[in-house]
Amino acid sequence: MKKQLILIASAVILYSCGGDKTHDKNNDNKGIQDSVQVYLDSYNKQYRELNIIANEAAWQTQIRIIEGDSTNAVANNKAQEELAKYTGSTVNIETARKFLEKKDQLTEIQVKQLNSIIYKAANNPETLKDLVSARIKAETKQSENLFGFDFKIDGKSVTTNQIDEILGHDKNLVKREKAWEASKEVGKGLKEGLLNLRDLRNKTVQGLGYKDYFEYQVSDYGMTTQEMTEMLQKFNKELSPLFRELHTYARYEFAKKYGVKEVPDMIPAHWLPNRWGQDWSSLVDVKGINLDSALKTKDAEWIVKQGERFYVSLGFPELPKTFWEKSDLYPAPKDAKYKKNNHASAWHMDYDQDVRSLMSVEPNSEWYETSHHELGHIYYYLSYSNPEVPVILREGANRAYHEVWKILI
Image 1 (cartoon, rainbow, N blue to C red):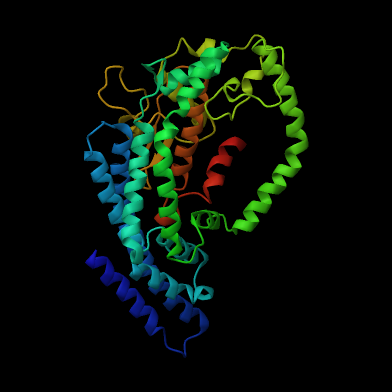
Image 2 (tube, one colour):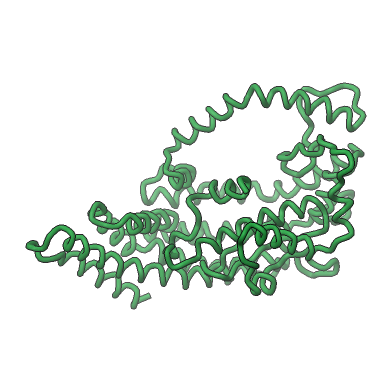
């Protein structure tokens, strides 16, 4: 860390000295740009090194959750705090701000990096280090409580895959309601911690001038909260007539499917085919096509391999060998003494070729779709992991773009 601060100080000194005023504008700009690049190269190097440690620690908290064992949580908190200490340091904030005062003399990609440094600092300001530490611990605790939860139906422990199977295929409304209610039991234990986390996140970003965490995150899209809210309201207004028609159709079709004579005004949540009520696909029945029937003869690895084959067919390379060695793709063994996060995710561990996915794949249509989705993230990571893209910018245009590009494919 001391070496990094010396490099930063050197960059500031070089910048402050400027150039000979007799030089032309291009030479002046080159002098400033060179000074900024010294700083950015130093920042990116340290940022990557600290992230590798932090990502590995976070990974362990997701793949092995043991009740009463805080080993992984403690290691994760320490790694995240070290990363926060660097990204939120007063030196980095002041240096980036100083360089941005002359942003018209810098290259576009330098300005993007400096703005990213300020953005990352806002979530971890050194001036509020106690709050940042408390927030990190709260985030780790919430994650453990969520993914280490023991779901039960009629007193018997079940996996989230089993809950999803019922909601995806069973027509017994009593069983469906029990499964849906079981999936929501975890929320009771999360509520208090979530409220605390909300307050900590709001207070943390206020240190650099944001009103709250929502304003902070919205700024990543280059928007104000008012602009974001107005855009969403516009979407809702424009889509409302179509949604109203679809909702009416869905109410009647679901009632018919489940043998309910009196059609409700609102669709009961347990009528929908997943835990989050985000999917109405079970209303569509294409005669002669049953993907689940075709997939049940395959194994879980085939499902993921098929996702890889899809992207290779588009011209992408095969996944790195380490993807298959380091990912955690399948459900924990039935006799396992630990739990894992069963919610699918894609990880860019080192901002280069160490890419991993965390899933609990089983041979069915839900995981077939999910595997393709997560590998979309993976191939996005690999695509921008090249020398032309600085480490700090290897994260997509914004979170929405990361999701949408796979839909376009």
